[in-house]
Length: 426
Image 1 (cartoon, rainbow, N blue to C red):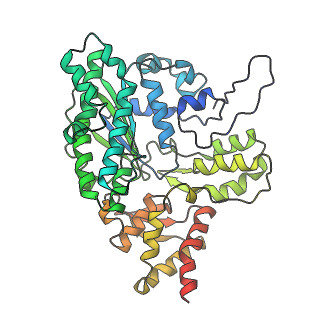
Image 2: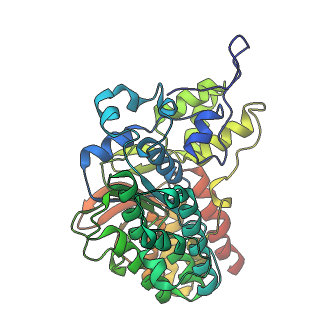
Image 3: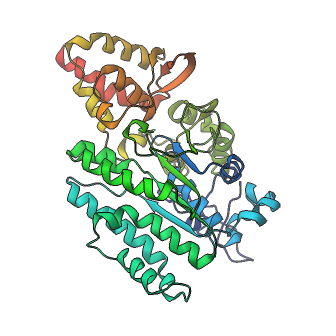
């Protein structure tokens, strides 16, 4: 782990700033922010060699920062000094072969959040427009003929037709391959956020069709694709979003591969607390923010740890806070609360077991669709697990896990948002 500062030579080295809300790798590395080195992910992605890789993790576990890191590593014209002192820089052969060698198409869909299909579609168009503008140098390329330039101009149009939207990423990779004479890396962050918002707002089927066609075009039978990496919260394979991909690999929170690349480990948290003079508070930080089990790794939520250090480094005795719950909408808990009716009294007793530190045995289905997330109590348990409200304490076979509340923070959410309803009804 390198702690980079921006102080001029000869001046006193200042303490690295805390990257609260910083999810852009270049800004973090150049801005003197504390960075927990996750560049081993680059090595693992290359060694696995999958054409399309999907990582599913709960929100606030570093997905966007890791995707930004991948972009800055692979993209032609990147600054190699951003990786000085990091794990990946030790692998010189790999860096020589891959660093800065690819054109990259990189989009994030987490900003597609609208109450109607028309508004969501317009937001998606703006995301495509933004990525096209990033590559506008293509318009000056002598290798591009008039037809290619006319095609590229369509990606800048705010009134884009559906067929242009769905073919945009695939055709952009074609144009980039012409320009650079090199196949293209595609990065799609938070691919399922538009589906979650569409389900909540009643335009789900339209959004599924649009994304299915867009992803299918860029990820399936695309001769200009080197490889692609996607992130999301859920796998949603039953949606047929990724139908027909022959080399599509999913790494979820139950897989051992990549289990330490999202989230902070014990050693990383100890080092961070030591750096900010908070080492005496390690046990309380672990009690509040540790406890997630990804594969065989026990990890902390990075958002919590960074915010804790930010709030406590000048006043360590400030009251502990629930950071994770307040970062975005909490539809999962809302649906769970709405399901708390009289026939589910067994669920009340199970929740009481969970908040007392015990486990419950449930079958987890990682393949449910957004339409099915809240359709039954069994599906709700799976949803709570996949979205980070519960974690696992052992696999029993046939899809069954011992589920547990990961830490004090999530325990307080269940007590304050769910069990309080039973007290009010008593």
